Length: 98
Length: 216
Image (cartoon, rainbow over all chains, first blue to last red):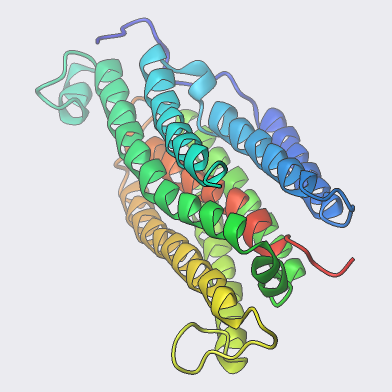
């Protein structure tokens, strides 16, 4: 698994990091704002979606996953995939018990 | 050049980049176990919130959403300073690296202090699960489940923050002693991965714990 050509340095600039940070703060305000809306069960869906977008931004850019080897994509993806299986299979039970 | 490389390149690796890729892969494998570890708690949360939605909404209202919001802001800012620390390490800028690591530690400490005040408030209002738990209304038993999850999830998250602060202080000492260079800063990079992961956990904890059913 040697990668002599792959650069360990990310191509991101300080300006980009600051813009990303401002974007994350806007999403934080969006989460707080959305919690005031009357959406019934969709309140959770909105909060969850915004959290997933924030997490993806952090993973792809702050954690440099966008610029690393496919092996890291697979590893990170596997973790969240198994968590999705866990939730999916469990709720397949709870949601249809009666 | 080869002399400086031989001191930073461990003998089992062919190249510095192979060493970097291995360190990064190792940290990600650890983070996957962390996803599953926190995942168990998030799944418990999902099941109990599904079973007792009223108790969860009522309990959530006792949390201060603005303190939680401020703490999210503090953690996101600490992620920015951590990313900038890695950026400084890439450029081989020792002074900036130490400054950003210190700033990250400062923000992590602010987060924990605010969390401490929140815990204190819960103890004073008998919202800690156990013999002295008090909660108005018929949902008391189910509300206790919410607070149990609240303390376990935020507590374990806080423990991760404390461990992160410990690692950061070691990194600052290492940076001060010129242990890092443009060619070698793996510990900074993989600690950054850990710190950002802990931030991601909070990104989910905040809306799940603080923002359900607050006063309309």
